[in-house]
Amino acid sequence: MRHRLLRLLAALVASTALHASAAPAVPADSVVSSITQQVLARSAALGPVVDTAKLNTLVESIVMPSVDFRTMTARAIGPRWRSATDDQKQRLMNGFEALLIKTYAGAFGQAAGATFRMKQTIALDATTAEVHSEVRVRGGRDPIALNYRLAVEDDHWKIVDVSVMGVWLVATYRTQFAQMLERTGSLDGLVQALEEHARR
Image (cartoon, rainbow, N blue to C red; front, side, top):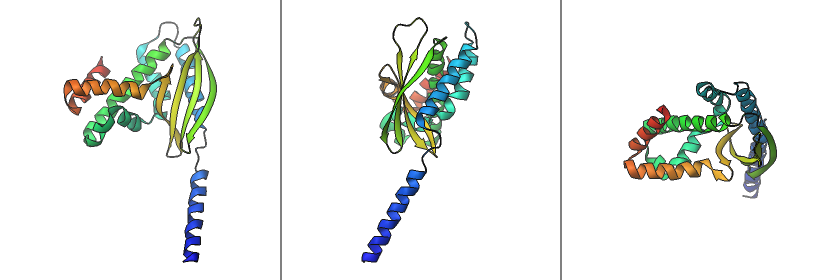
């Protein structure tokens, strides 16, 4: 019995060490910094009159690969996500992705000449971190607090929530989606509302 217990403890220690060594090669703050710097630089290159379609494409190619849409959509939908069909989940994720692209593009479209500064990274647990940064817009008096929450997925940090001036995106959309669900009465109604919003 004692030897069996020792073997079990050894296996647990080895498992913990293996998990700890599987930390992402690129730190969470580097992911955020790279994304933001790239978007700010390339959006500035578009010129004073921003082409919305080009900005959407820019955000889609740079930001979206580092976003965990499934987690963000599931949290924004709430408990109803568990009862959604696979087709509904995919359409909800597609609609939410389109909504996020428009949100990001709209924000960066107003950020011509902005500067970006990292502040701090807080480890919430072994696989979740919160990266605090700020964007100072040219002519603006106060910097804009821009914080990201990231989680490890397949050995990479993925964005699972974004906060602008203390307002978290997922919580905001959860309130909006709850109102849509109440108004439409079904997940299909929410899917259609998201798809119509994306087309506008």
